[in-house]
Length: 504
Figure 1 (cartoon, rainbow, N blue to C red):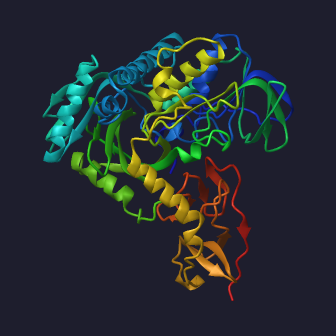
Figure 2: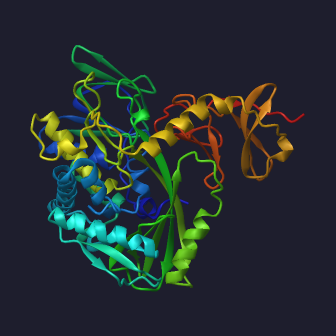
Figure 3: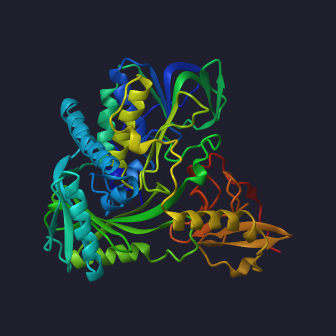
């Protein structure tokens, strides 16, 4: 199923042509999610000529599959920030995201965008006694930064709650309708958008960048913005050593109950996030969570069922209407990378590593990037510096990430499973050995076989099978491919090698 947000704009969605000739612009933005669109919007106000390239359709990936909470409340995060970076930078992070909420509201009002924008309080709650001290400590941390957070022990949710931290005056909206509003606001403003245009390379010559599309057409621009969710260029940024990706799942259930007055997420694992939206005369309750590292070798088949079970605690008679998944990048220190891509590539910028809080983070990124292009100092850029070389606090995750890379690149290549085609259940896949070669084979409901070389086209890691979404996922850097080999999530830009399968 598609996400509710994408379905909600399917009839009135604006479409754009594919790049079919060589072009020039002041700025080329690669990626048509919120980071790319917001950056283009702000640059249009600065009279810069902009070309935005999207490999598929505007907001068809992470942006269009989010829960669309516009909030500075990013889990139990601020005590961690204070301990890791100190009070100054923790406050910068909070103020930057609070400013982003105001920025988005201002754009909506000035451009008259109908996108179901609503002010709501945001809560991190718990159902476990051992989490209460963490929440109370977070309340004190946030208060020390000058924000009016508070501890509450009662919520409107029809499930047992022991306590929560409340962030007042946050917001939610329909991200795809907001995106359509941004696109409309940029019409006739020297911004050109091209869809179904995949970028495959970037070259520099005489202080000008040549951005090369898959069909060989090029854009020449002085400035480049990598707004591709995960940077599609490996060197010299080396972000594949500094980030990993995580998948989450979302169900949308129709309920007769009233809309929720707030937005909610729990502090313990597994993650459960809740918000609601009005859909006609009914309420659509969105329940998200069941996070896991992309490519992790676990059984995912019950993820949606577990979320539906949570929804039925709130309304036993609810009807499931939507199911979708989403993926986001997480930096090893949990802070987004925003700013210069690398000191070795001047005038190339990026925003990534939003840790599933991209509604505000993308606006923060757009403002920092535009200020850099315009030669201005942004008051919040210090905490997000993308070229930072600070000691990594999250040693455990760093160890896990390097272990996955080593296992996928070397060890697993020698652990060859002995399987036969008959062992593969219908609508599932396995990696088997055929004539000394590892092959990923998917069997559909009619027992048709689809073979691929199960090696990520990004950096050669061995892929894992996602038995819920029916995709080949990379445990190293989060690239994802369909069962027939098509690249659907960055950082990979090439499809998998197809292998013909014949039954003996």
